[in-house]
Each structure stands twice: as structure tokens, then as C-alpha cells.
Image (cartoon, rainbow, N blue to C red; front, top):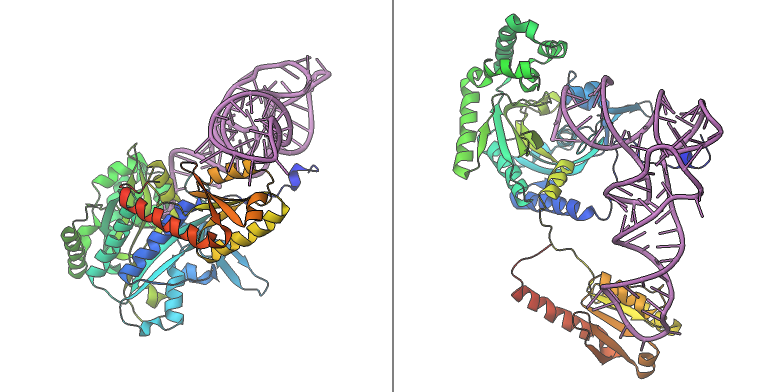
Length: 441
RNA sequence: GUGGCUAUAGCACAGUGGUUAGUGCAUCGGUCUGUGGCACCGAUGACGAGGGUUCGAAUCCCUCUAGCCACCCCA
């Protein structure tokens, strides 16, 4: 507890600032997500960060790690047990029920985007506050819905410059899963001594999760274990086949992964994940989703089939950076207003504002005195033109327009500066569109 | 939640018991109150925190904190 350092306030563990330099990546992902939502007819919905704790216990599932040890939960001043949302679907479904969205034409397609909270151990690409975007389609049990969601998720990642693999499986309906779980437990019973305590516990609590264990011994055993696809009812099986047929038609490559299960209890039938191929062969999930046909009813709504997926921002952006994915061109100022002397400074702030109102993206450095420093600033901003307004120009009622590429300067009447600048910028923008073949950076 | 590794300016690094902790980039200023990219000069700014060993600690030891890696899990 010393004087200086310990008073420094710092980031809470697992939290992250998204600095101006990071924003282009985030903007890119967010805007692509939003654009796609629009073009597929998914309407934006926002839900609060804080929900009743029970919402997640009832949806995500009591036995899951998320609920058991990762939720930021607390009792508020009104003695209510609340939780910072650890995932998005539960809140969306709650809103769907609470506001009667059930009365809208089906499927009700929703797009969601925001921060989530899980008290996990932080690691690269894993934070305690992290962002996801979600697409959810409620009220339609047709396999085409599943396929469309996969198409969107896959397409979004492709548009962001990545090449994901689609991992897909069906975990059937509840009866199917019950029969399968029994078979699985039976398969492992004679092999119990090869299992760690951890896996044994999981086998009891949530047998499906044994399938995606990373323990070498378990992985080997799992290879010969019964597969859930063999336990699907006829309807569930048909559903799955139709989803796959759609994907074939769409020419979306996928990997049938009989060991794919998801960490939340509410899923049934189709489950899928989108993986990046890591150099070392390790897999990293960008996101995933699936059907959750009983969740709405479970949370007190009418029986409503539904499906959705979520994609996490942090890993996505991490991989995009690694892959040097080109970002859309940044919106930067294209003209700089430089002044010399007190009187000119006053005029220049006004001029800057007039340019802005006329739709010209201008910049200035009014606090600087030297012309040199202002030119430096203009250069750094990579503006096309710099306007120079000093004593001489003020007397003549003119202004200098300097082309920053070739250094050519022209004197133009002060009153005409705004339309003149506009005209020139428009002309050079046109020229660039015609000549430039690659939209760099 | 478990185990391991790491922690030096905004960033990338050097310094492994001995003056005032260096370098590059970045930032600010000067050479140069009328012109940017170059050059030169200068300035700002750091040993994660606390304790211990020692004449002396960025360096060795302990504790805490944080990050990273592998688990766990997931996004």
C-alpha cells in the first residue's frame, strides 16, 4: 500500500479496452454482421446486460460450467438475484416471450450484438467480457432454417477474409439422447479404469460432454464408442439429412463430426461449429449454434421451435489480424486548414466549421503556431490538400490551396474556398475510382 | 478452478549484484513565426506491487497482482 502505484486504477482482470487503433477491426466485423442481417431479413434486437439469474439457470442448464462457476451473479440493492448475461440466446428468448413476438410472421428472425460476461480464466482470445453477434430464427422447425443459419455464419466468416470449416452433427431429440446416453455409459462402464476422475464425473453428470474431452486416453476410447447418429429417431434423422442436402446444394463444405456436442443444455437436433484451421492442427471455434426447439417453452412461452448461432468477436479479430485480412479503406480527412497568426486562427476555426457543414472532412491544428508543425500534421494525416491562410492572404482576401502530392500551390479568393475545395475533392475522388484497381488497406 | 512460464518508457528490446537503468520506433520541441515527407540536435517517459537477503537489488528469495501457455471450458 504505497503512495503512488497502488492508487493507480487498472483494468479488472479479464477486461479489455478496445483502443482507437483496434476500432477499424471491430467496425468491420460489426458492420458486416449488420449488413448481412439486413440482407437476410434479420432485425436487430438489444437486450439488457443484466437479467434475473434464474433465466440462465433454466436455459443454459444447472449442470453446465457456465452456470456452475462462470456467472457474474450478485444480489442487488433491491434484494434481487441478478446476473451479467453469460450468453445471448436466453435473453433474446425472454424478450421474444415477454413482448409477444410470437404474434409476428414466422420465422421471427433476430440479429443481436453485444458484450457477454463469463468468469473464466483469461487467455489470449478469451476474456471475461467478450463480444458476440447472434442470429436467431424462432418459430420454424424446417431444416432450411438450419441451413440458412449455417450459410450466414459461413458466409460472414468468408466475407471477413477467413476460411472456416463447418463442423456439424445432430444430437437428436430428447428421447434419442436419453437412449444414446445410456449406450454411451454402458460402453464406458467396462473401461472405467482407463478414465480420469474428471471424466468419470462428467460421464455421470453430462455423458455427452465426454465426447469432446481432450484427454488422449478418452479420445482413443471415443473413436470406437457408439455414435449418436445411430440413435436418432426417424424424424430427427430425416431432419438432419435435409439440412445436409441443403448444404450440399449450397456447396458449403462441412465435416460430419459425430463427437460434436455443445456446452449448453438447450440444444437439440442440428448442432454446428465454425472452426479455424490452426497451423499446428489445433482447432479454435469462432462460434457455433444449433436448434433449441424446447427452450421457448422451457422459459414459459408457447412451444416454439427455434435455431440460431453465435460468433465471438475477439477470436475472430485475432485470426483476422494474423491472416492480415485487408480492412476497408479508413475514413480520413482529406483537407487540412493551416493558419498563421491570431487573427487568422479565428477565421480558420470558422472556415473549418463551414467546410464540415458543407460535407468536407477537414482537419486542423489550431493550437500550433508554426506553419511547419501544421504541415507536418497535415502530412501525417495524408490529406490531399492543405489550405494556408496567413497575414498576406488575409489582407488580399485570398487563401492558398496546396496540393500535397505535388506541392503546387494556387491562390484562390477566400469567398470561393468552400465550393472550390468541394469541386476538387469530388473530381479527385472520381479519378481515383477510375484508376485504382485494388482498394488497398 | 489446476499446473507451468513471464513481467524494464506508449510499442519493440538491451541491461544477470556495483556510479545518474540504455537503444530503436512513437510523442513533443529546436535548427527553420511563410511551407510536409529527409537530416541533425534536444526533451518527455520505465524496472508490475509489497516485503526480505546484501555495504549495495532491475538482477537473488518470498508473497501478491497481471499477462501468456497447457488443462478445464468455451466464444
